[in-house]
Length: 345
Image 1 (cartoon, rainbow, N blue to C red):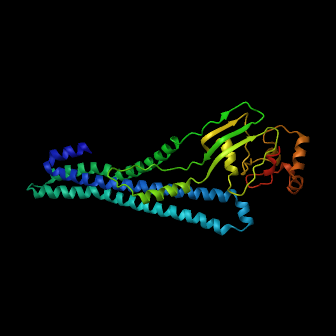
Image 2 (spheres, rainbow, N blue to C red):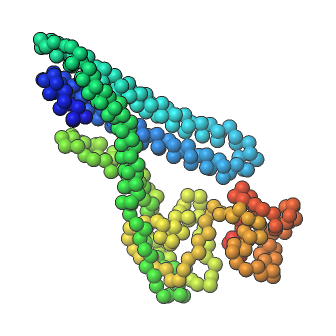
Image 3 (cartoon, rainbow, N blue to C red):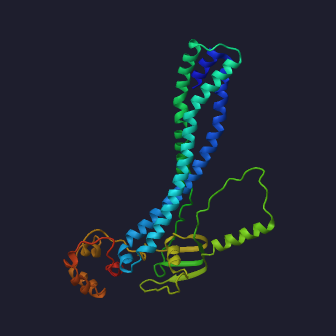
């Protein structure tokens, strides 16, 4: 591009700066277009994530959805996410087409403006001037035509890099303090825990007006509401060789308490001491695409006596009799009859 501009200057003199001026005018336009595309790309990825999450939930629970005839509400939820995603894609493509059209017309506009100024300055236009200039304008056409594509790709790359940057800079899960008190394998002293929420770090621009006291108080109240899910003043000792149950209402923090023990919940203060190792069986089961027996054994060697004991305790004999091949029936994630086996074997 620079070489073409230099040859144009040698050929038509100061009129070549018309080309440079129009290109300088186009650069801010593309900068604004790039910011818009970047913002729209972020919104598109947000709704794409929502749609994928909803579709995954539907596929995982398709059996229950069909049994309870929940097709319509779940479809509406999926369509709503897809509709928002398509709206953002259409808007992005509209801006992209505006950029492509502008860049496609730019060489034509540049040549017309340059030749007009050259003629207005009293110079004579002939074949020895026009055809070399058109050759140089054609050389400029390629970078100007593909400039919007480059801008769009850079916008997508920046959004992806920002997401990766936020992931890489996220705080690591704090390591649990290990102990050797096997009489009380799990101990929490004055523990305070909270769930971390992904907070977006916004850059503060110079000259931005400070918010008044009322707005700051409102924001503080909002932050308090957002961070209301905390566990405070937790003091507990769990004895070994005893069954300990955590009982409470829905949403009272039972699962959060277990997450605090395993280290998945951020510890603000206090001490959490774990002696030995922990096996955690969550509420959502993980089922292999294998036979019922393989799922029950879960990689262990087959012990016939213990195997039948587990079937008896979990009341699975009747269920296995219903299946066409008994415990040799191939199952996948949609079959949930062996949920209770995991905690018993």
